[in-house]
Image (tube, rainbow, N blue to C red; front, side, top):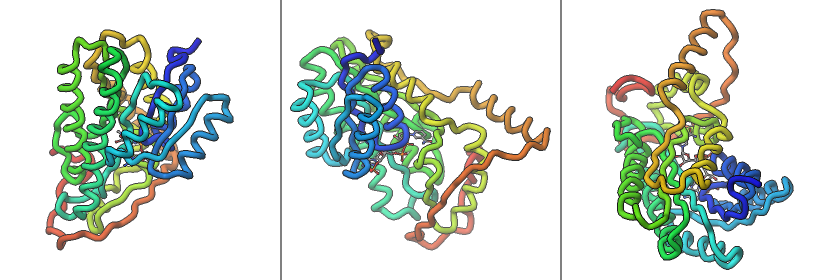
Length: 298
Ligand SMILES: NC(=O)c1ccc[n+]([C@@H]2O[C@H](COP(=O)([O-])OP(=O)(O)OC[C@H]3O[C@@H](n4cnc5c(N)ncnc54)[C@H](OP(=O)(O)O)[C@@H]3O)[C@@H](O)[C@H]2O)c1
């Protein structure tokens, strides 16, 4: 019997990347999985893949930035399965790499709408169901910036993740003695489209030149962090509301740096990293100095 046997788990942004890896792991752990993202074809493909692997899964299109769509997702799950036990706010978006005011307001707002409003909307519908029942688990997925350290050139993304961490901590305090578990998890760098299909404001792309090395040193496939989400969703965290976990600690950071150092010392070829960077026009003239490069101390 799996650790999520007979549980119903809803994962936003789960047609690929970490969300899909969590869905696959949840099915193996015995759960019924509800897939969602903005794209009907990719939701259908993810559901078909899970079912053909023997999993119980269904899906619905849902843009997390739109409360009506998030409410419709929750209603679909309750209509189909009678309830849900776990809700994972996983959908995330990073605006193009570049100085804040050089990113178009539309793309900046997309991060606000997906990462901030989306986490609020998902938390709202999940807690509306969980609080009256006195049970259920809400898991919010964090990212770079969550610890509150400013991230120049990734400001829209990092500031939204700082908000999400603070929001989750406060929710956990507010609903501490309700029987509902509220958790946050920072999965660290993962080799998903999010990391390897980047956008940069034209003129800032040089700041991404170290990315292949950074990815080689510290990125993991999403399957490993997905297991931590399963653990958070399981009864192992009963009574531990407010847990804030992160996948990458000092040991992983040091390990990645040592591996890369040894590789260079031994003159071993670098494993290939496929990185696509799409250039987005700046909405203001470029300043003389583009700010610190990725990884530079601020
Ligand atoms: N990859 C990393 O290195 C990394 C590091 C730290 C944290 N994270 C966080 O981990 C989470 C998952 O990231 P990932 O790497 O798996 O991303 P990903 O590969 O880009 O996948 C994102 C998923 O979210 C969906 N999505 C995007 N916008 C959405 C919206 N507004 N409403 C609903 N679904 C939406 C996408 O499908 P559609 O486009 O079809 O909607 C896709 O299924 C995010 O919260 C991200 O911030 C990632």
